Image (cartoon, rainbow, N blue to C red):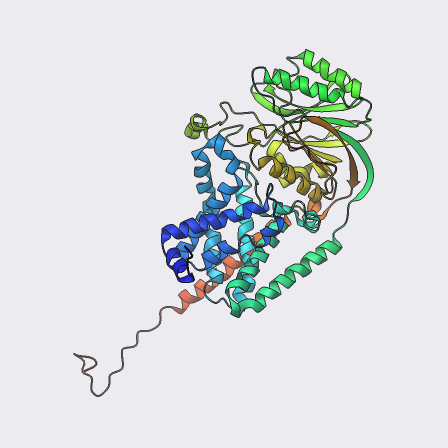
Length: 528
């Protein structure tokens, strides 16, 4: 049955139908991320949500629409968690979705009805700034980390990667929301199209200027990096079987003149101090391929209490002593926040039965011939500040060791692999994303792909000729300046609104003027 415009308006008048529409509209941006990877859709994906919110009958309803749209967005970008966390995924999405309530309120505040030119111009700065605040808050590790930042949808777009070198993924998110706001105004408000078009032109001009001004990484060397991806290995003795498969794949690299071999997250399931036989086998492999091997140990340590996930460098003589203990853990996957309160999550899903222990600092390792590497583990590759700090500390090559084996049939492996392109572009350093089960990928210092991905169906080793570059990108130098700019914009808005409210209070209420009476009126019966 085809619904008319009047039917749609009547249905959206129902809080239930409106809530469903808000959740669906909020979920739309997911199509711009891998695996669909419709990057161009990100420039209009927020338009239905913005149009819905601006039409809200009250400010409170606009905040609800923002919240429910945020719930839909968080469910969409984290849908792959449903098999592991079940209903708890919905609870988390509902809690984090509330971060978009102020954004919904501001959207109606500036775009409801027929906004003036000044309101449209203000919306082009305020709404992207409010969006960035949402992304900043939910980027905290305890709230799930920066997975699904809107700007990360542009991971495979060369001009966007250039902009990432200037302001990181934050700048991309800001510009994408600004474009969506301008398009929404063009669609819905004929009288305000001039400032909307001016906003699009200004965004294009600023983007072009950044493109022309931003420095390009100067390639000044190359290294040969081998990635070993064993594939899915389940069943009894899985850790031993995985090690044996990785051993076989690594032997195939002999004679290929590699500078470093990288294994994925949890590639070694035993502490090497407790299993000297495994340490000896790794040292023999290092001698055979004539390169150090970076493994990832997921085990209870012998020298201190608790289970750690650690990047460990092994050379021809055994472990070199270089070790990085994972600092930012996956909520519920590697630890349960407030376990005394939320420990029940382990009974409804695959939440961690025991909390992993945290490392205390990032580490840059020297693997010989002047090559310095900066390792990260799993979803640490989603945090822009971690790769930035490694680059500033002297890393020539960024590495992320990941697994994603629990989410093989979802979009998570492709999305995770795409994040390394942004980290490379932001820092001007190449990055290797090595996994147990795919997707493994390598990117050059501008974020460009190097070689082919190893997909989730691959059990193989691959060698990549990786270009090296030095120099400091604007993002590496100045950090999250778009976030600070957004804070200033919102602070200016707060000061302006506060001053306006103060003027109204000082003016006081309008004096009461008694109704005028005509010659035919009487005090007892006005109008008679």
